[in-house]
Length: 107
Image 1 (cartoon, one colour):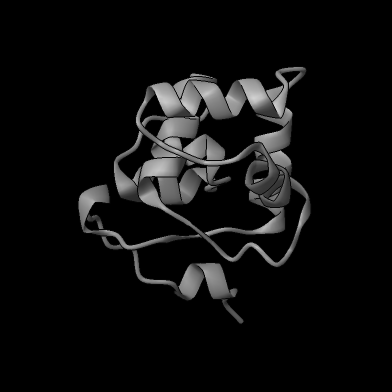
Image 2 (cartoon, helix red, strand yellow; image 1 turned 120 degrees about the vertical axis):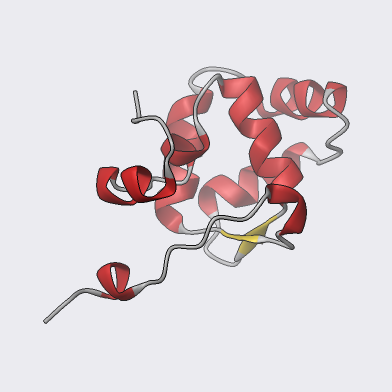
C-alpha cells in the first residue's frame, strides 16, 4: 500500500501564489537545528531586516508547539535566507519529492 506522501500530487506554484505552508513538528525541529546557537531575538531581528515581522515568542512556538499549523511563505522564505538553506531542506522534503519539484538536492 502506498504511503500518504507517495499519493500526494506534486504541483509547482510560485510562493507568491501560496497562502500558507503546512507547519509540522519535524519542520519545527529542523528550524531549531538550523538556528543553532542563534538567539530567537536575533533571528526575529534578521527576519525584520528582510521585511518579515515576527516575534521571538512566535518563533519559539514554531519550534516547540504543535498548535502552530501553518507558516506564511514570506516567513518560510525569510528563514531559508537567514539560515542559508534551501526550501526543501527547511521543509524536510524527501529527495524523491525534491527531484519531482526540480529543486536542488538538500545539503
